[in-house]
Image (cartoon, rainbow, N blue to C red):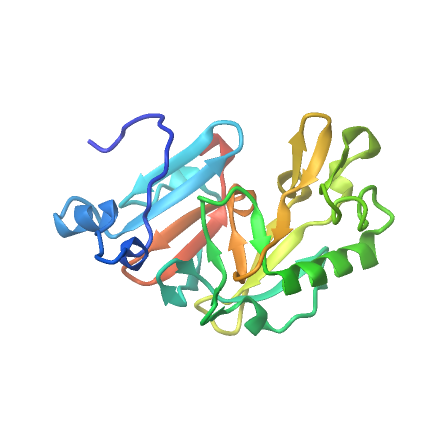
Length: 241
């Protein structure tokens, strides 16, 4: 019986490669699969108010709406996928896909429930900020002294309707090469309440492509299909998560 109820902590479910220092330790899911206790996949949904649910070895149709769309994994280390573009209200940031890819010193683009926000490399974040300001500088906080300054927060009282802010959409290569996935993140997710402020839940750091953390993942039921080396996305059913 793997239904353990509510719990808190960190559970590593990525590749064994990440657990080598210098010898490798098989992650717990690998141990379960080897023992025949579960299928080699897991699914997860996150809920900002209740935490979320981890389905080990299964896909639960009560947790999502519509169809699951899959993106091929580009690297069997993290749950890396190929990011083609970032759009702000339909406006591309205008960077080539290799900016988001895995290289010798960049760990690429991947989904990661262990990261609270969305992180992107500094080149991508600068282009993101420039594009956001270019098209939406009329909105409160959209400036280098607001959400794109330090700290990246503004007073709640300065914002009218959060819904006035644009979706941020991540365009991902799908298993159907001619039809990418468009995965939007609404402003209610990326503008994080913190006391009397809203803070931008998207930031820039070196040595990554884009880390699609909880701010992204809370909008989707995410299937980590390790057998078929693919990651699936479907709109989350909050009532089932």
